Image 1 (cartoon, rainbow, N blue to C red):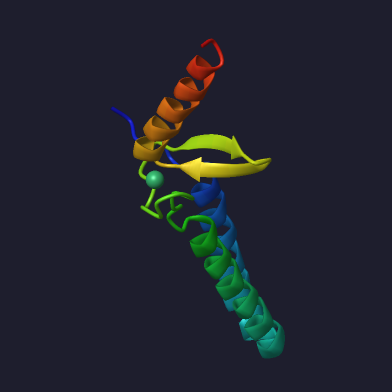
Image 2: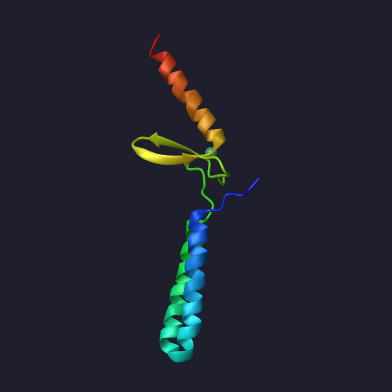
Length: 101
Ligand SMILES: [Zn+2]
């Protein structure tokens, strides 16, 4: 089974490679510009790391694995883990059921 690549990661890697390559070739001609581009490359790396940081469940704080669920609670979008999704769904159906009684 082919592993699905993260498009963000692929794009980030390509961008970073281009930036590093540019920094090296530019650094030979213009060291100051090369250093500047190098700093941009490092900044991009930090941004990629930030974008790929593990998401945490907004309710219990557990690191979200592949599956996460989005709930709108009090007009706020929340990402929750399957466990909290289950308990939320149970609460919601309980509340819905009580309207019919
Ligand atoms: Zn949770």
